[in-house]
Image 1 (cartoon, one colour):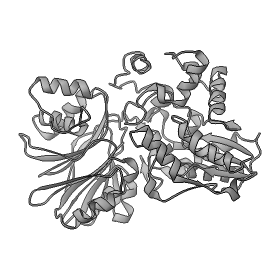
Image 2 (cartoon, rainbow, N blue to C red):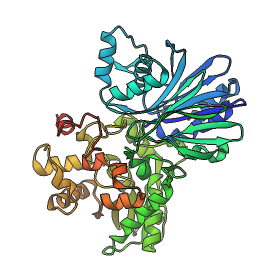
Image 3 (cartoon, rainbow, N blue to C red):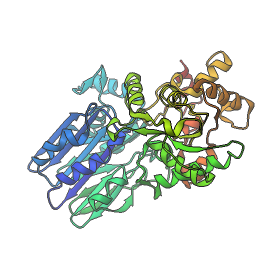
Image 4 (tube, rainbow, N blue to C red):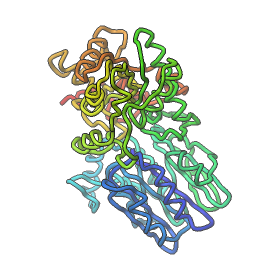
Length: 484
């Protein structure tokens, strides 16, 4: 998931754009970009894989002027894209994942459309979206036609001479929120970008809604719908603790998750409650509050500059970050029974090799791991995260227990079944911990507090919204393709 931010102001907006975009740095590791409209369009893109957004754009923002702008922290592709179209030039940033991107690109090329932003043999998703929008009769018509064609999700900010068109994907998987202050209007994915920039939230955009934002205000171009399937993982891991989605704060949800995990742990003795930095900390605080056991930090993250070990695209880079960022404190670890709260177990390799091993090596007496969400079973189809079933720890366990990949994993999803218990025990042994107990789906949903049908739970349950138009709409297609 890429982070996007836009602002339209009666004054120069570039400093606010710079800081508003930077507040999304936890959402991407590859590229940062800004586009500003003053006398003309000015666009800057930098590789941020080895440095922070602030350091790469600090000199740029001091020399750019304009009253409208959009910014992005990109998880993969170079953004923003600049496009000349029949309805005028525009710049575009996107957040999401398009499953049928290859077939859409082939269709466009067969109709004489060329792509210039090609990396590693793959079309840039944002450029593809720009090409699709340009085929419409207007910007709004083009966005709606793009929504009709894609499988997956795409939220976007489009900077034109009229202002910033903001469009939230039709499933509401990615949040977009509008804010206001005296001389400006802004739109953001993370509401944590607002307080220090002095914006007040005025509207949570609805799924499929399209608005135009300029220095005079916000006008709705396409109404949204109630067919929301917002990403549950935003609250569990991806989102920033100070952010709120649909009015529900991330930090509070994580505390509730930790409390829920603690309520099932009456059968173990605990000396220390801890969380894997950073996202596991909030869950651990909730666990400590409920259990009345001391929260301590046996593992400390060395500076925010190491970033997240889950988001980089290569396993080699993920492992290096996981190894280097956490430093053990032996004086807290030695001879203690430690609960380790974690947001999730995705692949399991980093937790096993770079977290648990450090605790055992430092003399831990017992290690009890408590993920704040259920076992991940299916690759996400709305976000650039796990792309194959083979990566997932739960699927490795099932493969070992069954002797092969299986298509129907419903018994393993059911936490009351014997197969579920065997799967969890296999993972426990594999990551080498004393006990392992996952959060239940219903407890996770209760911690968020929104209706279950409003949340995307696909990566845990394999079930989509009834109105979903994605590649899994045909029965078992997604599962069969992923297993292959």
